Each structure stands twice: as structure tokens, then as C-alpha cells.
Image (cartoon, rainbow, N blue to C red; front, side, top):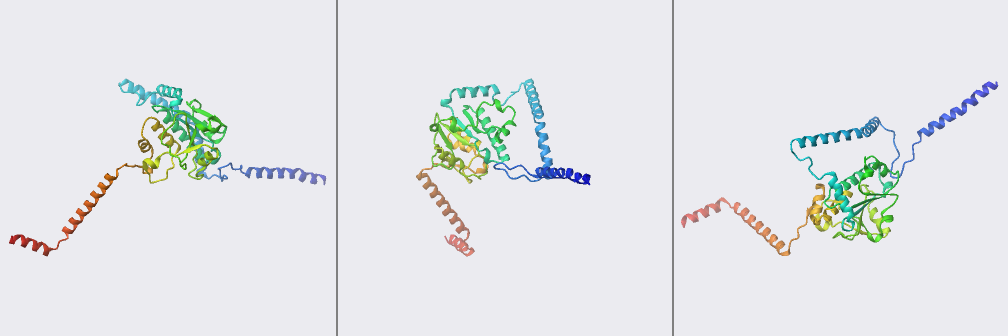
Length: 335
């Protein structure tokens, strides 16, 4: 009898432990800010996940093969007496940056605000880092590269994790600021936050001013957030003079690297209209505004009215009846 009592007593806690383990296994992790609760992965999603893991594993191998191919192409071009490069070398580009950073008072200064880690999905975080890569490339290949700062990176956050996927990111010639925003680095009077909601138009670039661009990729889910944060912190705001120089079919909301590229082109000496037209994608449907005088506009309107009258006369002449044509011909014969 005691044995029969002991056996279920020893098995009951094991059964309870198994149930607890199953419940813990079924419980999903709490979703982070900006994330939705995970669903069970389908077969296609599992296959895609395995492909991505394999892609990350072979990333360095592919990069090494690409470098070997580029080296082989340079050797072949050198043997044929052809130019080995289409643009400046890496040493020359780095020299440009060093000389540009040495004259910070005369160069463009831009800070990318990445203090939006909790407001973006993982896919949007990856897009944000890609835009930062393009900004770094544009600045490095510019004739007069400026000072580039990336602020608001949270240590071991999702943006930091996405940065780590790019080999050599620590060696980029720019300034990283972890757990510090632009407010902790620059004085407020030297900051201008660029937002499309601002009432102030940026007519010219000023020396000694750092222009802050919000690195938020949210597909308009947090509309006006950058402008709201800037005004709450007592910062000056400004917008690019898009409507003053071009007509667009879409909204005047640009990507982070498009804003930076326009600033860089203007810093190189291009007028605003040319800088905007060369930067904006075709889907924006941008067309430059023509500054016509009132006399020329009236002259064009008069020419249009004359053309309409001429077309109307030709159309009425074509509609003459056969009897009228006979009378006209007979009249010509009598004369």
C-alpha cells in the first residue's frame, strides 16, 4: 500500500514540471516597441530564414572573391595600357576627407539623428542603415567633403546591431556618438533641424552651423515627429526650398540621403534648382520653375490666342459648301 501511494507522489511533480516546461516553451517573447507578436513560421518562411543565415555565413567569402576579380581586371587593364580606375583612388578620397575635416569652419557640417531606434521595424532599421551608407559614400566622393556625425546610437540596440553587419564600419572616417544625441554634443545655437513641416526656408548654408537630418524610416507613420522633437527642445528648424525652385507631383518628403545630397551639391557651388533637379528621383515628377517676366507671359498668351484664331479660320474655311465653291469659281470666270 505505501508503495502504491509513493509512486503517484513521485510522478505527479514530474508531470507538473513537464506542463510548466511546455507552457514556458509555448510562451513567446514579449514584443519590443515597434514590433508585432511573432507568429508560427511557415515552411516558406523557414526556408527564407535558412537562406539568410547561409547568406550571412558566406558574405566574407563572396567579398574576397569580388576583390580578387577587381584586382584581376586592374591587372588586365594595366597590361593593355588602359586606365585602371574611372574615378579617384581610395588614398586620394581619404586625403580629401582629411583636408576637408581640417577646415571644418568652411565645410558643410551634418549630423544624422538616429535616436529613433524604438520607433522603427527591423526592416526599416536596415533601410535606415543603407541610407547612412549612401550618405557616407556621397560625402567621401564629394569634391569638398564635410564633417559627418552620426548621433543617438543606442549601445547594442537594433541600429547598432545592423551597423555591425557591415565589415569595417568602425574604420569609416566619421564621428559615432553612442548614447548621446546632438543636444549633448553641439550647442543649441549652432544647430538647425531640417524638417519639411518648418515655416523657415533654408536659402543659404551658413558656416559654423550643423544641420541635423532625422534618420527615421517610418513610411509616414510618425508624421511631424522630427519637427515636434526639435521645437520641444528649443532648436531652430528649416526646410529645403523645394517649392521655391521646382514643381512636384508628390509630397515634399525626401529620404535622408536625398536631403544630404542636395546639401552637398549646394556646398560644392551648385544653385538650388540644379542641385534639387539632379538629386530628386523621376517618380517625384519635379520640373524647374521658370522665372518669366510679365511682358513675356503676356506675349506668350497673345501668341496662343493668335494661333487659336488662325486654327479657327482654317477650320471654318474647310467647311465651305460645294455651292459656295461653285459661285466662287463662276465669279472668278466672269471676271
